[in-house]
Image 1 (cartoon, rainbow, N blue to C red):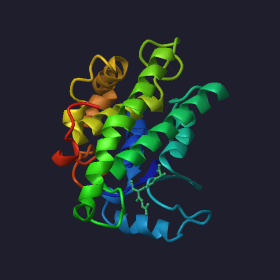
Image 2: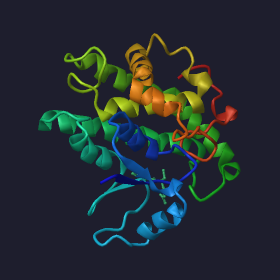
Image 3: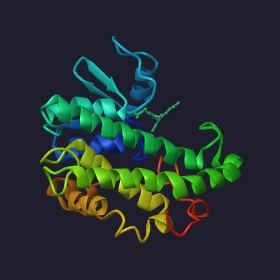
Length: 242
Ligand SMILES: N[C@@H](CCC(=O)N[C@@H](CS)C(=O)NCC(=O)O)C(=O)O
């Protein structure tokens, strides 16, 4: 049975972390909201159509009777089923911890353009967004990226991947994180090659993998835009480097 992925249509957003895992594994899945009537089906799930649980927000994944919400939780679930995670507990929970750290930075990226309220327009919180982004670029971005660089260097089992000796969903998510940051903050991300060598090499490696390259060239892949998590406002990318 195909996995049913529920995520807002029109943006890569948080759904993209899940899509990349499904695409890399060449798993059968339906991107529900992109089908005719799909957004209505997504909304119905949010209203409690599912027998067992009501998810708070997309993305969520339905696999038969199982409904899993939150990116990191979905990837924990898929990691086991698609062989995208180590089999042992030490490795599985290490991967989950890294994914939760990606969840944290993604929330901070979102807060760069919406620091006051998700329900307010960007234009209503522009001044705060500038202050938030400046702090993010100076303080938080190097801390997070430096951490992921350290994780890659620390993994003696692999010269490329974050956990263990094989590719995991964490590597696919790090690819999307770098992609998104380069879109949102091109100026700040420029010139980081020496500092984040392993992370950027991982990004390039993932981009060239046949299943990922073919996904990126397909219509299933949505471009970044001004509605998702990673948005480009030049005035928020005003620094010369993180
Ligand atoms: N912790 C959740 C966050 C989910 C989330 O914030 N989803 C956004 C779309 S990317 C949403 O629709 N939020 C609605 C809301 O927070 O009211 C995850 O990692 O999946």
